[in-house]
Image 1: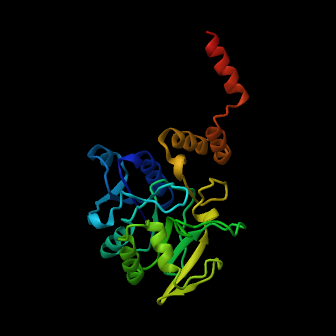
Image 2: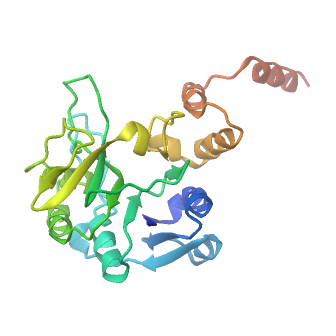
Image 3: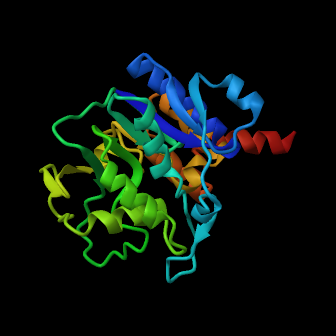
Length: 261
C-alpha cells in the first residue's frame, strides 16, 4: 500500500505533516506529484517526488464557477493523470489523498477496485454542484484504466473540477445512497465509504483520515490545529473558536495585562 498526493509551494506546510503521518503509520515515504514545489521545499520533504506535466487543456490550477452563489471551485483536474502515471510505474494498491489530509491511523481496505467517500446527510436539499463525492480521499486497489480514462476526459471540460468529473462519470451506474456495499461500474467493483471516517473534514475524533479543507489549511490556522492535535485537544472545537475569533477566559486575561503594560 502506498499513499499518493500532489501539491505545490502553497501546500508545503500541509505536505510536511502528511509525510510525517505516512511515515508513522506506513513506515515509508509518501509519493508526491510535484505541481509547483520549490527546490528547497523538495529537499525538506520525506517523500518520493515525481514531476507531473499535464496539458494546458486540463487547466488544473484554474477555477470553475459552478455554484449559483458565485463561489469558485478549484479545478485540481490533474488527479487522474497522477493515477495513470502511478500505475504505469507501481503495482501496489494506493490511496490518493489531497495535500491537506492527515492520517491518524493506518488505513488499508480491500475487496473492491475503487473506493470513494461521501458525506451522509439527512438534508435532502443539498446542491451537489461540485459533485456528490469528496475527492480528497480515493482508494485504488487496481489501475481501473477505463474509469481513469473517462475521468481524465471529463477533466478536460471547461466547467468542471476533478471532484465533479469523477462524480459525473460514476453517477452513470452508482447509487449514492448505498454505503459499504460493492457496486458495479463497467466491470469494476466500486465501494462508497463514509467521509466522516475516511475523509473527515469536520475534524472529529472518529476520523481515520482528517481533511483540513478550505480555511482549515490556511497556514496560521493549520499550524494551530496541528499543535492542538498533538496535544490531544478537540480540534473541531478549536476551529470553531478560531473561526469566530473567540478567546478562552485565560487568553482574555493575558491580553488585558499585556495591554496594561
